[in-house]
Each structure stands twice: as C-alpha cells, then as structure tokens.
Image 1 (tube, rainbow, N blue to C red):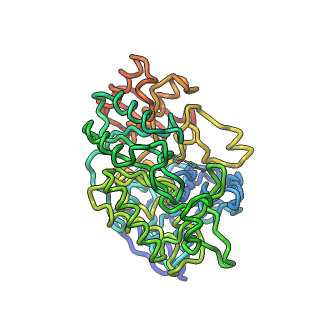
Image 2: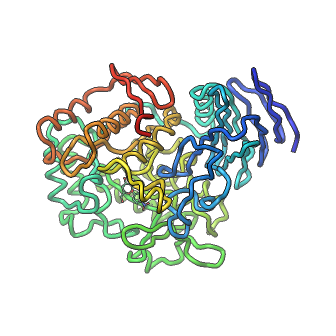
Image 3: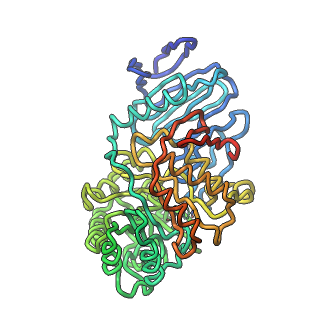
Amino acid sequence: MESLTLQWEGLSLRLEAQSLEACPGGYVLRGNRVILEHPFGLTRYYRHGWQSWSLADWVDLAQPPALLMPPERRPQADDPLYAMAKQHGGSAVGALQDPSGKVLLLGALELAGRVGANDQRLFGFYEGAGQDWWVAYGPQEEVFASYANQLALRFGQAPQHPAPRVWCSWYSYYTQIDQEAMLQALHGLQDLPFEVFQLDDGWQQDMGDWQANPKFPAGMAAMAAAIKATGRRAGLWLAPFIVRPSSKLFAQQPEWLLRDAQGNLVPAGYNWGDHFYALDTTHPQVQAWLRQTMQQVLDWGYDYLKLDFLYAAALPGQRHQPVQRELAYRQAIELVRQTVGPEAYLLLCGAPILASLGIANGLRIGPDVAPYFKDENRERYLHDPTGPSTWGALRTSLHRLWLGPLVHLDPDVAYFRSRYNLLSPVERRYLQDLTHICQFKATSDPPAWWDASERAAAQDWLNHNPPIEALGRYRFRIGEREVDFSEVL
Ligand code: 9PG
C-alpha cells in the first residue's frame, strides 16, 4: 500500500492505494483495499444498496446506519453479509458531500466492491480479487456521470431505443391472476399504446416449477398468442433462481440448492408464507435446467421477461464451482441472455445492480410501489426500508437516476385509478412524474377500474414524453411544470 496525494482545485486528499492514474473527469485508483482521508467530518454520505430493492439515499454520518432486519429473517432487503454492519457502507459506490455541496465519489469498477465511510475516511474493498476504483470530485451530476461513463466502458451499455410501455398484472391482481381476468384486462386496453402486456407472479405452479397452474387452463402458449393477437409483446414474470420447499424441484433436486459451509441451505428470503432458497447456478445440471426453462418460456411466445429475486444467485454460499458470488450471478444471467437471444427484453428485478449492467435491458431501481404512500411501522419498527410503499419507491429510485446512461430505469408502476387506492391525486402525480423522469412507463391499473377521466389521464401519459430537466437533487422541470420531490422525501 502506497501513501499518495490527490489534488483538485480547493481539495487535497491523502490516500492509500497501490497506484493512481489521472483520467478525464477523475482518477483510476488501484488496490484491493483503498482509503481516502477526507476533511469533511460528519457529513452527508451517499449509501448505495446492493440490489434493486435495497435502500439508496443520502444519509447523515452523524446518525448510526439504518438498522436492517437480521439477514436470517430477511435476506431480501440488502446484501445479507453486511446487513448488521455497525459502520456506514454500501454496495459498489459511495460518496460524501462537502460544505460547498460538491461531492467526492468512490466507485468500484469491478464486481463485488463495497464502499464505506466515517468522519475521516471514505474507503473501498473488494470481496474478491478486484483492484480498480473510480474517484471523482465536483458537482454531483458530473461525478456520478463520470462514474457511469467508466462503468459503461467496463460492463457495456444496453441499446438505447426507448423503453417499451408496459401493462403489468402485479399491482392490481397480485397473485390472484387467472386466464379470464387477464383476457379481460388485455381486451379492455383496446387501443391504448402499451407495447407489452406482462403477466406477473401467480401463473406458475410454484417457485421452481415454472409450468402453468390450473388458473390458466388453456396454458401459457395460448395466453401469449392472445396477447400477440392484439399487436403487443407477451411478457412473463419468473424468479428463476429461487425454489420453494413446496415445489417438486425442491423435492427432486436437493443437491441443486445453495448451501453454506456446514451444508445447511442458505435462506434466500421469506415470502408467500414460507422460506425460500437459492439454486447453485454454477452447477452444470442447474445450468441445463435454466436453459431449458428459459427456452420453454420463449417457445410459449414470451419475449419480455421480468426476472425477479435475482440476488438469490449472488448470496454467500459454497458453490459447485468456487466462483465469486457476484460473478456467479453475472454468469447466470449471461446464460439466460445467451438462451433468449439479443432481441428478448430482460427486465431484471431484485437484481444486484452493478453485476446486471450490460446484460439487462431494464433494471428495477427501487422497492415496490403500493397504493398507499408510506408504511412507517414497517420502516421504523420492523427495520425494513424496502417494504412496498410509494414513498419508499420514490426515495430509492430518485437516488439511482445516475444509472440512466447504462440501462432502462424501471421505477415500478404509476397509478391512475382511484379505485382500491389510498394515494391522493397529488401522491399519484409524484409516481407519474417519476416514470417520466425515468422514461419507463408501466401501470397495473385494470382498465375496468378506471372512470373516463382516469382512462384519459392514462392515455395522455402514454402519449406524451415531456422534456425533463434536472434542476437540483430532487427538483425537476417536467414539460412546463416544476416538481420538487424534497417536499415529500
Ligand atoms: C411478485 C412481486 C412483483 C414485484 C417485485 C417483487 O421482500 N420480499 O419479500 C419481496 C416480495 C415481493 C417483492 C419484493 C420483495 O416484489 O418487485 O414487482 O413482481 O415480486 O411476487
């Protein structure tokens, strides 16, 4: 480790790293562990959560880090290995704000990097053999843009045609979808310009058994054909890396499951009334099964795939091949991409962020929205900043906009309906505005739940892409209007 000095106008930093190279917009640092000594004291720290749902926010270093539920109880909130850390930290990137408002950023340029901070240091380390880091100092937009640019060089960039407009079944029917209700929603959309009609969770037999359940008696191919007959792409949700104990797969292939050093199953989460577990995607038989599963979905006619709970493939565990866990995840989604081809749209959800770049077309960048604004009890008393709520989704998504040049940003759905909805018109407007800012439009409102004015509002939203201008961290000009999210954050 060398002791080096970094210079910017008005700032000189001592740092520890192997080497340092000046580049346009910043520096590349090398070292498996690097330390920047900063003079900003207990300032604001940009914390970046590991996967789609994990908290991204500017937090106060003077406050203890947000408590999370113990990972044995809830591994799906953030990287479980660091959930109980007493220090401020995040995945891949971190930043500090100086008194003038400028930002000092340290960002990983390889997989499995962590960045933490205290009143004296901004530091990074790699869980694997990684070496390269990006360091930049200046206005927030510029330093995050320079980091995104470096990531594009390393990981590649999704094609930049506009994101499709999506109708998704989750935020109205949840798991209660069936063939009749879906056909009714599909036909109720009539000429509304949605490119994709996407079935979410509820069509499958179980997590692990990706076959139609009895609620889809005509089968999944018939459903896709009905969707395509309306001129739309057929979309389907799957969680290909997780397995429920109730599934046939769990009973038949226990050796495919990810285990810890003691041979115990690694918990991947708790949902649908039970624990669920992860596949070891480095196992050749699992890889063959994954290819077959994805090929079947394509053969049914689905080519917009919302792949969910993906972090499960990157959980700590003993793998068949000793591959670093984020690389194991990346290889698994690469295998999916190879199977479905370059034209299929992959929307990755519950997905480790950095490891998804260059493979995902779209990436969920926050937790689930909900037809209510805030869930304070869950946040405060259950220590879960990732529970569904409109406020929680706004918060994390607004802190991930810098990823825009790399991938389509999915902030989750907007609502237009007042039926079964506790959101006020103003609160609904915030979500609609967020979809404009992210340029990714999706809704789950069944057309039968809209009155005439709500349908007209949805139509208007689908047909217009107002110009967006960032005026501040939380302030935007959207067409003619100014929106300030700090009023509600
Ligand atoms: C389907 C849903 C929708 C939604 C996804 C995802 O922590 N959890 O237990 C947890 C459960 C569900 C969830 C997120 C977190 O939602 O984001 O859009 O597809 O799965 O089950």
